[in-house]
Image (cartoon, rainbow, N blue to C red; front, side, top):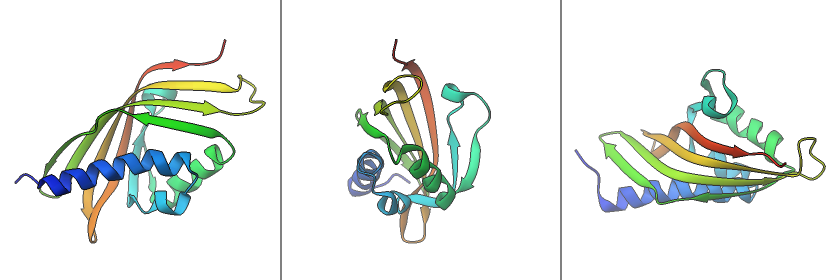
Amino acid sequence: MSHSHEETEAIRTMVANVAHHIDGKRWAELRGLYAETVTTDYTSLFGGTPQKQSGDDLIAGWRKLLGKIATQHLLGPIDVHSSGEAATARCHVRAAHHAPRAPGGEHWELLGHYIFELSIEGTGWKISGTKLLAEASALPK
C-alpha cells in the first residue's frame, strides 16, 4: 500500500523541520518529531556503532552538544518511500557549524546524506531512525 501525496508531503515537512528546529534551538518542537526510541547511526563520521536510545535522551544530548553552537543545516530534495506503517526519507545535507573559540577551529562543515526511518506511533508519523552517510567532513585548516 502506498501513501497519499498528503502523507508524503507531511513526511517531507517533518524532515525539513528537523533542520529548522535544530538551527533554531527549538528543542521541545524537535523532540515532538521523534519516536519513543530512536536509532542513530553516525558511524560514517565518528566510527563506533549505531546507538539506540530514548527520544528524550537523544534530544538532551543534542541540546548539550549544539546549544551554544550556531548551525545551519541545508537539506536537498527529500525523497520519500513508504509502505504501510513504515517510511524512509533520504536527502542531501550540508551542515555548517560555528563554534567560537573551539579548539579545532571555529568553522566545521559536513557534507553527506541523511536517511530517516519513520514509523506510525500514536496519531502519526515519528522519526525512529537517522543515519548519516558522510561524504566529506571539512575541518578548518
